[in-house]
Length: 461
Image 1 (cartoon, rainbow, N blue to C red):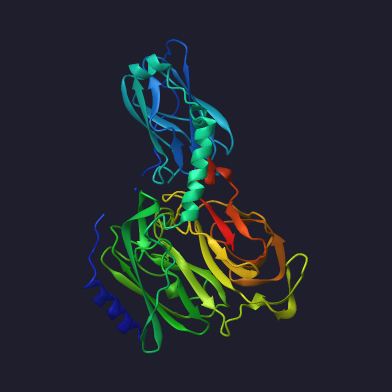
Image 2 (image 1 turned 90 degrees about the vertical axis):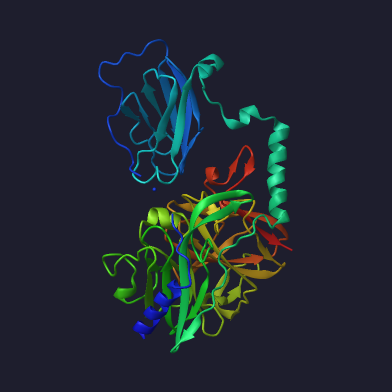
């Protein structure tokens, strides 16, 4: 069996084109070189760090005067601000979340300089900027930056906010969509799923394309549905320019199918394929497949997808219950609750930005229900940060975690989801209208130009 599927994997390579195509956190000396003298009064320039961005970029500074960078960390993890200039690396060192520090740099000559976060891996995730020193900046008042909204009128801010909401409600912002069902082929009683990893240009919002990595050209990758006891094989075909591997997060698999290079298998090199075979042994619920090679970049860039283990009789374990008419809470032991609508939502951050199912608002898809429907939402965080997901207007019921039904479901309207965690929540859609559903780390969702990033809505009709 193993040989035939491996042979099929190799044969698959013959009809798929190989697509041809990442940095040190920076090092060197920190602070001003010994003996340097700063001439004249320093100019203060404001810099903001977020996950994972340095703004503004470019950063304009004057020539021939000392620079005092006021660096604020608005991200959800520690960052640094480093600058290569004067044959020296000036570095703030680690900046706590919410803190502001000062980095003093001696006068710069006319020219451009590289700035970056020196935390390992953050530069690769896009935390870079260019510092431009020029006489023009000096004449203009030294490049000190102001908050973006200070240059916008109230009417402009309101108009921009309104427009992105209109765009969202209009729908059809991008031509691509992830989470599309993947049907297996059958071979000797085994369900065979082929996943092709490739480097693509992914449209995260209308007209905004980013470098991404995708399974079957989708972010998230195809949704795979299986049942308890199914014999399955996943054929991974690597069309990328770097090695990769496939791990089945939360699933019970043989050690040989765990997908960790040089622990359970070799890396799957560009142009190669690898087959993972096992019998599904886990209870009904949501599980995840994702890369386990250079995963900061590869998973952050889109190499993840859902494996849904479906209940045999079509009834999820937490459907059987008695509904409290006042709170909407389900109590186990009563009549089954019908699931009218079912949605899968991946939370992501990193190279793609702040995304839900690979899209940034207003290109995210709404959750649509009719009044009175019971809505089941599968939530998974394949990003690198905590994301507290908040639903307006409703208290949803948290009924399962990591594929396991909770003995004591609980009500919430904000649920903190850590990287790697999965939750199932039930919503009884009894209040008509469009209700915002978003991450409650506000820099992930809204700025002076309106909502963006990890925002969608529950639309009850």
